[in-house]
Image (cartoon, rainbow, N blue to C red; front, side, top):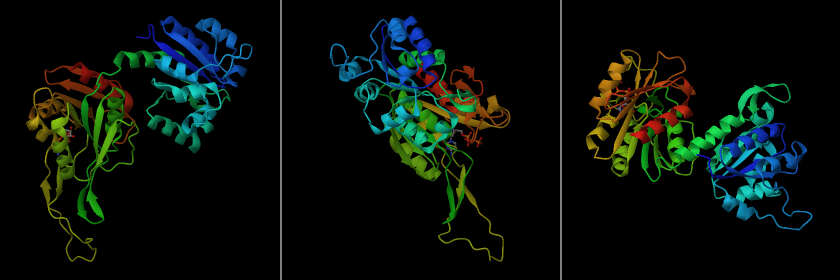
Amino acid sequence: MLKGKHIILGITGGIAAYKSVTLLRLLVKAGAEVQVVITPSGKEFITPVTLSALSGKPVVSEFFTANTGQWNSHVDLGLWADAMVIAPATASTIGKMANGIADNMLVTTYLSAKAPVFIAPAMDLDMMAHPSTVTNIERLRSYGNHIIEPASGELASHLVGKGRMEEPEKIVEILDRFFDSQGKLNGKNVLITAGPTYEKIDPVRFIGNYSSGKMGYALAEEAALQGANVTLISGPVSLKAVHPAIKVIKVESAREMCDACVSEFPTSDIAIMCAAVADYAPETVHDRKIKREHDDTPVIRLIKNPDIAATLGKMKQEGQYLVGFALETDSELKNATEKLQRKNLDMIVLNSLKDKGAGFGTDTNKVTLITADGNQQKSDLLPKRQIAELIIDSLSNL
Ligand code: CTP
């Protein structure tokens, strides 16, 4: 997919700059046209001669070429590119990019770039964990940039931790996949529910569950990256959606979530029911705190909540796709298939609580995707973001 693509490779001053040479070679080998832009401190780590020989283009570093006085136009470069990759991205460059400090050619080019930008941080583990770096990376993410998470391992300081620039092969794979899948959900309206619901008992208590919302938020980010307009109907969670194409509607109870879904579904092409909806709610909500000095132990009577997925299943029109989740502890496949049919879903994502690292609160998940025509696809135990990619991929195949 990289054949003929115009890539700006931004290199900054970190030890991992040696990996940029391999990255450049791999990009050129894949058929991309690469323009290297290097910061002044990047040149301390790797010479422009090597980079220009491999890219077949003069390396850009200064605003003016010293001997000719020719102006290097960051605006033209920004327009030329199909993608910009900054690898390695040091804490300092990340800070400048996040705050618009355009004191070198790389940051001015970044600020002018119209194309998607991929940032591969590389630094020592303590710098990586510092709140200012964390905030700057989050800010860059919220501007729609793609962060290529650094891996954990031995660092240049010989300390072991998170901060190693992702391997060049992996970066090429990420770019390749991006161009391959770009716009798989272009212009589609995607509705996603996420998180738990809270069912009020009295002003200070509720019935809830352990759902963290991580899977639903990962799905929302992935769908947005694939060009979708996402409406994320979220129960109470401590997460924030970062992609600008995600509209968040916050709700608390299953009833509120259901009302929001029913009003949004008619204009949705795809709905993914990822929330862990409470099946029951207290019949009466006390308007004052239930006090301890009761003569009897209080009894809370529960009533059934609406089944949101089944409600949308009944509303579903030709051309709309409805996806559900099933969290099971036993007879997993049988139960999930029954749910798929009962709720009129097109696909169900089964996770079993028997699988270690899958389900609630974890950063990973292991799923089986079951489609209405009986197809099954099993995943390994993967980060939730990768599970989200898998779900969006197989959905776009549907
Ligand atoms: N779901 C829903 N509304 C509910 C309950 C569940 O929309 N009131 C959705 C979930 O978001 C999920 C799917 O239905 O996509 C299955 O949820 P799950 O809790 O596994 O199933 P239930 O239908 O609640 O059945 P049970 O609790 O008996 O397993």
